[in-house]
Amino acid sequence: MSSEDIQAFDWLASQLRTNLHLTAQALEAHQGDAELQPVLERQFGHTLLRLAHLHGRGLYEHLGLAEVFILAIEAERRLVQEYQEAQGRLADLGKIPQRSLADGVERHMRRARRLAEIRGGLGTAAYVHGIHSVPLRRGVYVAPLSGAMNYFLTERFIAFQPWKDGALVLWPGHQLQELRVRAEVVETLYFDVNELEYAINRLDSAELDREISRRLAAARDPQGSRIGEQFLHHVNRLLLHQVIALQSMQELLEPEHPHLAAPLTTLIDESVVLIRAALLAHPSWAPEADPEDDGPLRRLAGHERALQEHASDHATRMRNDDTAGLLYKFDKFLSVGSHADELEGVAQQRE
Image 1 (cartoon, rainbow, N blue to C red):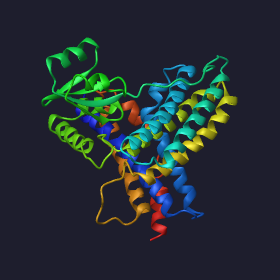
Image 2: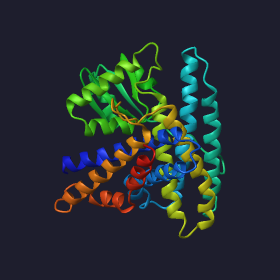
Image 3: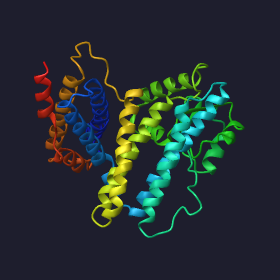
Image 4: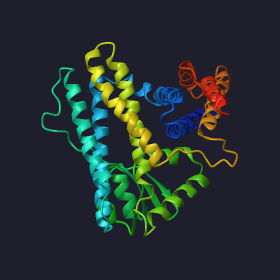
């Protein structure tokens, strides 16, 4: 695969998330503006649509509807468990869990049940005994990587990457007792094992060293949560993945099951509200500070234009050499268009 094409795709996906943050920021700054608010709400929905085209379509188009529903229901169940785990971590540290965690448990359990009800409309019985829990697979650092630990991981087909005197382990669950009885050091660095796998596969050795060292320092901070990443960033990622899944599911439902697509709209609308609020509460994908920042609206307009130019330039180049097979992703992104002209126009009107 062409590393240049992969880097171009990664940049586009990352900057779309930044675009989502900038749009939420602009909506907050211009709340109540009768002319501008609809423009920004369209931009927010449009950015989610493009993220769905980049990440969701290829996966969900090759699954049956029942399978897609299971993924979405399990995603809500995972959020329930993540909030419960966060409550437990705070209690273990002698802190009082925030009310927002209990609210999250209640909200996502309700949403999981509602999705199970909608899925029942496909005519197949499911979840008659309740919605089961799902494994919370973590990215973990263990040290030292002794012969016994190496054997333990290899025998159980658990993937790991040696790192310094230990190993980065793609652990298939959140209970770490099996590791703790075999290693002196066990640190959870990633809430999502897929993020560790991504780092191992996409970062060069120096970048990986910096990233793991940063996360180790966070996990060992006595004032922190004893996890190598911020919980709210993890929640933002889960919320974003879920709204992409629900939007993709709705498109699959509409041709043959329009009566099921309609009630799904309520959950999608709630998901959009949730991710907007979450981005403002914890700006996971905020751009770096700009000393010449001229406001969220102007910055959003410029960012939107840069996204289109990047995608167009790389799509043009890939038409002659699509080694990585990513041209269709860029074409899907470009096919839904851009609101760059409209955003630049309203930004100029307010100068």
